[in-house]
Image 1 (cartoon, helix red, strand yellow):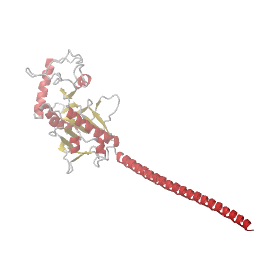
Image 2: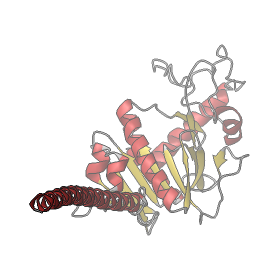
Image 3: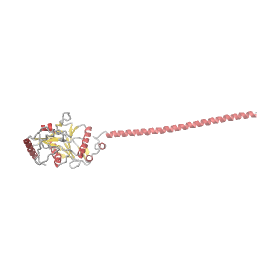
Length: 344
């Protein structure tokens, strides 16, 4: 990695070259008017980011390069102390990992409304002390994959008229770009250094391969210390109290519903789910008990009806027997009367 002085010497040299060449800064939206390359002869130009390396002022960047300047190329530029740097597109595993982590952050903020998020094409301004610069400062505009802005941040975010954040994000997440060694160096070294100098309190680097996966926390002296997972493999945030995640879940991208039932996440991932499930289970149990009671009542009623039917049948049989006995008694009396008449 080049030293800061070497980087700035190179920056000034390239700036002088670009100014001497009077590079055309007319509207790049016309695909037929691309900026002349600033690379040395023999150095290839990135066809997907033809103006990478171009030197422009911050005002020119905001007006022409902050958004996609082309009609036929999908590219996003960051601004690094005057130099345009293309933000490399992510591959599918990187996008999946970043999306999973973004979902986790959204769940946290929906439960604990202490922050807002920026992501994708929203940039924020970094101002860093640098003795190698004539002004003593260096500036950059970065577009993090995810940025977290606390409600306690001295600069507010959320106005409909704001396309970038004028303050410093409290937490930044980047999915490492690894198509080239230079991209890896930018995310793991250059941005790590600049985010620390600018005051970003925590910086997370996501990497599906795990090789460059790192989590940093700002400490005294404007530098980062690495956040190590604890004995249970948990990484916790100080910027977002209560935010914690298991490294295994990050690597597996565990389903959100499964996380909601895990004690590690139950405090911020669908925190009402357990209560709702317990309530539903209790309701189901009550319904089952009521059904059992109803069934028992039906059985009891059927038994009572059976007993009543048997009693009715017995009563009818007894009445029939009584009528038969009475009829026989009448017959016997009639016969006795007949015999008495004959004998007289």
